[in-house]
Amino acid sequence: MITRTANCKCGSVKLNIVPKSGKVEFTCEECGKYVKALNYGKYVTINSECKKCNGKSFKIKVTNNEDKKPEKWAPYCTDCGEEPKPFYADEKGNVLDSGVRELLIIKDTIEELGQRVDSLDGTVESNSYTISEHENSLYELQHNLGRCESKISDFDSSIDTLESDIDSCEKDINSCESSLSDLKSEISDLDWKVDRLE
Ligand SMILES: [Zn+2]
Ligand SMILES: [Zn+2]
Image (spheres, rainbow, N blue to C red):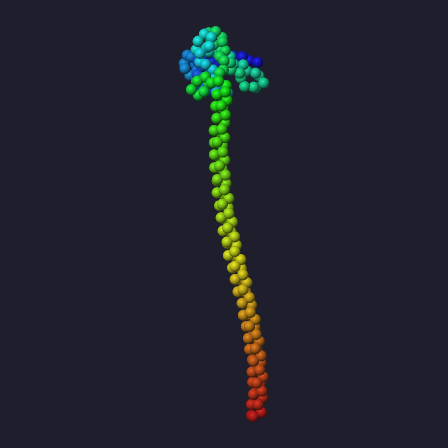
């Protein structure tokens, strides 16, 4: 375990306390620069003055456990060594009793839940929009499919018509061929008769 006294970059170890709700900021007493903020939990803070001697100068003992846990920062009064006691306070620094603090935490939680419900509502809305877009695409696909099917049945009936046309053409050709052979035999008959006449 290593202990040291927290210091500003300017080298000073004397710090002032700036209480905020839920946390405390430490600034340098010599140069005024921000040194460190410590979290004290919801609506918990410490005073900027020592309760015992009213001094405003504090030092911070920093304890560093070597097993890599976060450092422990413990402020104490520069003049009398008193450690400031955490207390409940609202955003404006007004002291709260524990009941009011609990109510404020519940109120914050309800507000957070409300915000989450709002964002969930937004997500549900955008999801249902996507679903209705998909439904539209599906409807279009079904419509196109229906058009394709009716074109295919049009082709089928055209093929039927063509086949029956081909059939009737073949019949015509057959009858033409038989007429032709009739004609040929008539011609050869005539030829024979002409031969006889000569
Ligand atoms: Zn400084
Ligand atoms: Zn003191």
